[in-house]
Image (cartoon, rainbow, N blue to C red; front, side, top):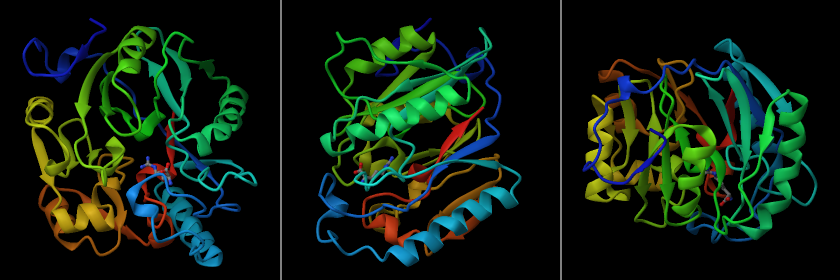
Length: 299
Ligand code: ARG
């Protein structure tokens, strides 16, 4: 049951065969007090070193926090730390989980590929342990990177993990994660460096629907996405590549928090029954991230 699937061959189950997963109701956010672009570890950061407007970044982050609060999703705040300018992207250091069969909360710590970000992880280990989550690490024998919920994304409502690999996470950790979590994993190879984390090109909206940029996947990946979702909303290349349209976040199966100006994507979301809420994340896009990577959903 706990296996990794990379092609449609061998898939003999549908999403409804996976255990039901409750919707997380709390959002973990990290303050951008020390947010900056100081190095280049993804293509979006080049040309932006030293260009962050810190006052504007703080306003944009507060606006994001306010939207979650207005939607009734309680923010749990972890303080950003000096010397860790990417810590605000709190989707990356961990993969929180709730095993519905064992009724067990836990979190798997990331093994950051980006050396500059490795010291962020212990702060999140502490934060989750304060929340009474069991804190798990990948075994020493796994010698390859895994960058948390940037690449490992739960299927809404189902205990089924989508796992991106190719740029920041490697494929190997998903084998171990499947066993550790007792969950099926659908692994998707990423093919375009601008879409270096799965959450830059894939945002599940609800159990039936997903927002993707198809150009970032292989044919095998697209076939897997089509198999597990009934509605696939596609973002056009310009909005996906330059405005992070697919780094949108749907926390409640209805509202979709999205970078402002993704007009075509927003219209397609509305036609599919969703309600876009525009936010300006321009200061964070300089570092290669938008809404989805600035939060971590927890149970
Ligand atoms: N500068 C950060 C990095 O490259 C941005 C991370 C954005 N997070 C994400 N899940 N896409 O690591």
